[in-house]
Image (cartoon, rainbow, N blue to C red; front, side, top):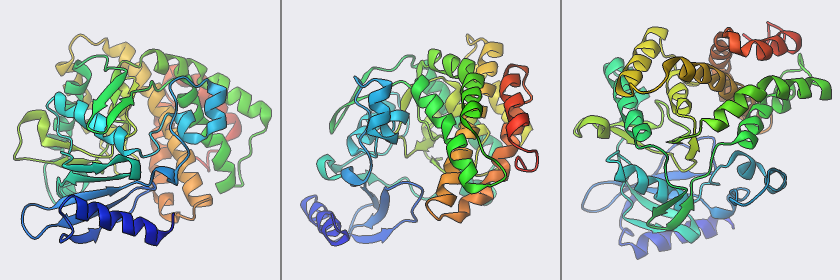
Length: 365
């Protein structure tokens, strides 16, 4: 579909839902194919237009597909991403709201065309309000409280019900976890010619990660936002308790190990979180979930955090080398620091040895 045809769809949609008079202001883009506009109607509060063309990405995963079928279908199926489908966003939002967590209201949507009008949570992203002087610890502990609510809800339903219909909540399984890790060996050599990985190195890579992948898939027991960090959380101080944490960009939610969103938040790719704050936040989490075996949980936390950091380094390498987005280079040193620290854990010794053999120290800086 051409750009002008897509714009015609947006205009027709806004007219149909009574927002043809709204002043439209595009928001800056991110690494996805999704785009947002802030809508300012002639009267009433501002709203958000979410625009995700359904055909812009490879298809999402059919729950019945085998690993081979998923690999043949494309990356969204391998990783169990939603392909930006509006019905996924709507169904996850409905589930979060049933738990009294803050997801945007959706006053209007056109799922077949990938358009939705959302409640506008404003611009108070955690990262921005902290930069402006807000108390960082208070915000992070609130984010932990929201996760504890999500995790205490227990095993989520396999099928989520939303205003655009049903959406399957798939498990972040071995295929998705290993597929994510493999982005590292696929894309880092295309960014940095100091590394190369032959077939034997890649086989050793997968063998080293296998126990972590198995444990992560076996521990998948809660809904994971999957992109839970300070750029995707909005501070809503007028609300109470965990509802003060406004959640966005959760359309790729899966059933996953409960550590996933924790390390996404506390070992962030985009901003530094002090070790003392990470420790305090984890203490708060375990105080709220006193029945959790902390030692076993933290072993999985370190392993899955390291895997996620390898995945993200691969994604950033792809964004820089393939997509011509050099701004992601600024995040690489932080991700290497996180990864190097996690590789010091005894359970990660096989992975650490692989890095020592195949990735020079000067690359991991």
